[in-house]
Length: 77
Image (cartoon, rainbow, N blue to C red; front, side, top):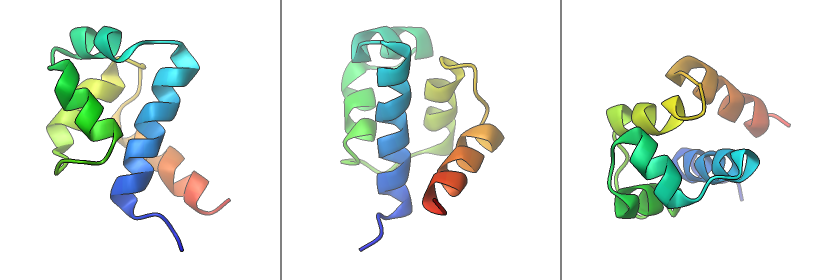
């Protein structure tokens, strides 16, 4: 069974953090969000808001277009 889009977003957020070698606390601080919010996004346990995703991915130097393009490309691989 294919992962839902939200699961793919959560997975990519976790993957990015691991790739950069950051702890959740590091990303949350840089994004200006609560660490529990980040944890919930990475675990797909809350409804995701686009503006919050944007804050998180900005830490990695990404914008929404690039982030969702990566998810789309991964979905087709």
